[in-house]
Image: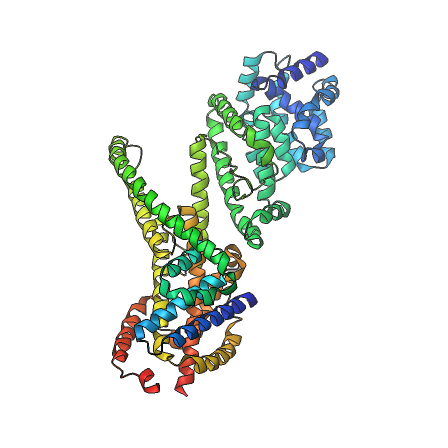
Length: 192
Length: 417
């Protein structure tokens, strides 16, 4: 419990730092830009608090670092651990690019084998029940969806995907809580 | 007859590992001889196999006063012995009829098999059956040595598994050290351990039913056990150390230990498949605790669906909140400090409710029942109560409309500016 609030406070501090940095750089921002900045700084703060140990945090950092506009923000938030995080992010980026190429190649092979497998499946229809194969297909579809949702989840197998999802869910919830409380507090302030 | 029979039995029992017939009658003797060394057996399985040649002799010299010796065993103060003696005793009348232990292989086997109790010994499922019913690790070792020496090591490992399943803290501590998120591994294991044990129990019950009916197939089953054991012979030495073999969470070691259950394929591929599947289902269970309202859902597809919905809704909430914040906090610096101070006050009250401790790693979180912690969170944010997942979309729509309106400069942030 103590660690929860302390981590949230750390997150909050970093986030606000990022927001201030954003604000100082551009004076007049539209709502959308502001929202983006808020979200981005929130994501980065989240990732940095997690110390880039998890895959999704690294993926977040990597995707953020790809966009050059965010460099200043990134460096400010990530701060002293820049070297480690940059390495991690570079790894992730490299992994993602190589995995994308691999995936394309492997998909072609898969497509070729799908035809064969389908023939074999039809011949072995008695062994596997149709509901079983339907369920499998459903599961595959949904894991694909999940992979798209979780940042950095495209190149992970099912087991680590579920782990990452778990972690990501917890952190998302934390993020939501912090943002919500901040919003509430600022509303109260402004309401006065 | 006794000495020669003893030596003959020894010769046939141990060098000839495949001769189950020899082991059937000698099982009782071995068990008896081993009963003396029950405390020490927990440590060494293989050494006891070597010991009987020495200690078997006293039993042999006494002739088939095994019944007497069995009653003698009761004095050793372990109920497992009593139980063991009880059911082995029933087989003795059968064995006593046979002259020369292990000499007449086929007849021995037939008569071994004819006894339903001995079937359990021969099939090697004794550890699961007897151990399950009596729940003592020593009994497993006893039973192990009553069975084929090939599968003895196999079942000994299952005995070790039982040790872990019975909640031996040492195993969990040992394994938790290996876990990256160490503090929670124990919890995770404690959660997992009932599952394999329940699987074993169900398996054992099935075996009990089957072997009553199928007597002749016992031979086949013995043979199945042997390849299984040969598959695991290489894992064997490590398995006694790595007690959570069913968990397979040993990042230090590159491969996972998995015991093939009876009647299942022992192909290395299918084993790996099974390990993988169990891992996945394990994590799905953890996810189930996290995602609210997923206690009753069984099945990967539905669970995944719920998870996806939940993650999506969380992400939408983040978007929504960031939008809201962007409308609320244009002038960031001063307000933020005040907001921080205010928020610290509000957080101080709410901190106790928040059971989220992401910093301690995943599994610890789940072990503490995060669901309990999240429920107070939702009601506590009273103005966001309508932000349930169902109505989130509506809220989001409303806010986006508000946000779009504010771009044209009519809303408060512009006024404040």
